[in-house]
Length: 282
Length: 315
Image 1 (tube, helix red, strand yellow):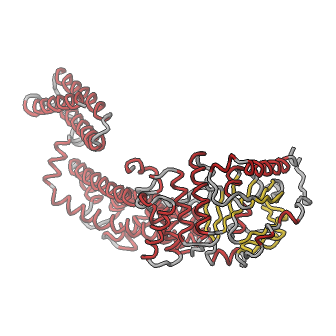
Image 2 (tube, chains in turn green, blue):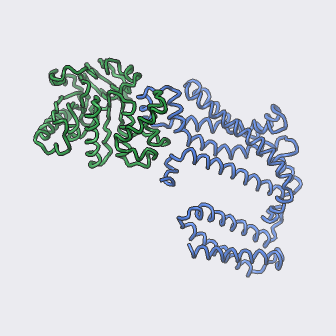
């Protein structure tokens, strides 16, 4: 039924970042990383021989079908999962050191807001944990709520907000302690398409303003092409990188860019790469 | 709404009329059939009226207070006319009027009993048992060894019947309220322990991952995530314990006590065939238990307003 292949990494060239940007420091360096889950019946290879370098300030999307290991790869970066073998550094540190240094903000698939805290106090949660003084906490909560356009909702509770608003609060919460790295795991996956489009545009503006490094897991091709500076196409069984596609759409793009030939060309390349991954199963 | 109010008003008038008739004009035990027709009419009318009022959404106090209050009145009324109308012996079941009379006549005595049983044994035992259960749960939660070792022991303790431990507690702690409080501690400790442990484990994986990503310590995760999400479980245990504590406090007094206390009163007065006083004590216990439970439920609402079961009333 199922054959495990180990000879599936693509040529090394395609995995390197665009050479003209080489002067930027490496934010995430992954070499020959593998992760195997032990399950009741048989071990499952979630990641197999992954190589990936991400430079500071990049917006990199991980795209692929369910089970391709894109979320697992991001959880390894966040020290929420441990690799079985291989090397990974985050800002030059091990994932655990990077987590203890509060190097990244993680936006989960669900908003994960605490229902007993108001929106404002949800934003202040990481600041409380990190020991930021009270006056500074208030100021930051106000600033980042304004950035995501929710300052009028500061004293509401999360469950009084729509799904899209809740996810914006969770993004503001990840920004509130000003990490240089933002890890986003399908943050808009549960939202309707109109809300999703709107949030995609907001996220792009936010990335341009803050110059953060963003890793973004998605299974939507248009979303990945619209947002990213590079797209990493992954494939399941075992989870591995098939291809890395550069994405050089103009920086001040709006949603209209999705009608242009450049956009459609890149989207087509991503789709072809994804299809190549699927043919292994059929 | 209007029809409901009219029906209830008519039923109240009918009920008042029938009670006056029963007290002044009729002989208990040989009541004419026409009287029972009147009682049936009152019951049917109030049923129709309450059915209508229960469907009223606003203002909320109609459905929340007026309907259950009137229904309680209807039950008391039926109890009164049936016991007097059929001349039921007071030893079997006294009428509400007689119980009310005993409540008023023995107010001083009943207050002494209430102070002894409720204000001393029950409150002390409840606070100590629930508090210890909570503290031990927080400690046990941290250590898998204690969890393995203590939980089966707790299950064993909770299976012990109170009639078994009450006399032993009297030997250990004397005749006064301390031994009753000890029985209550034993009864309330385990429900709190189990519920708090379940509550501490109730935070979702994603909520815990969030804390992990902030590099939050054990104490921070406990205070800011696990205890708040355990609150609904903890209040559940407090409500269970409020009932258990009252039962335990009363029953424990059957096994040796100074000459005061609700359990003592029940066991002594039943022996003297003073069933009215027993019923009056039961009424006090029921009232105290309901108020205790009600206060806990109100505090719970204040603390867990965010829980899905209370949200609709807010937004």
